[in-house]
Image (cartoon, rainbow, N blue to C red; front, side, top):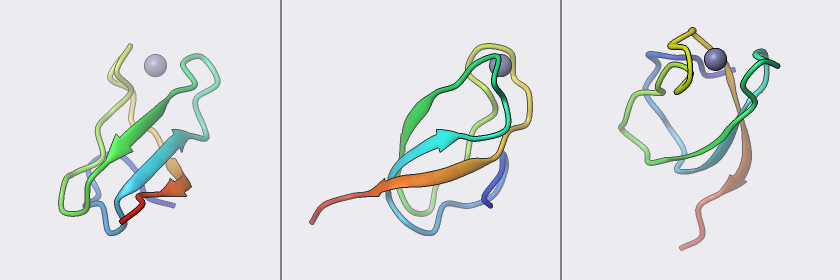
Length: 54
Ligand SMILES: [Zn+2]
């Protein structure tokens, strides 16, 4: 699973999967780094929910 600090390979919507305190969905673009939790800066893991449409 991609985690905070990893470089995004596939653009799309990702959700936080291991941080139940602040479940979030974020939009990611390939080439950018996955951010920490927006609420508390905890390192988190992400799961691709929906790839970006082209
Ligand atoms: Zn958090």
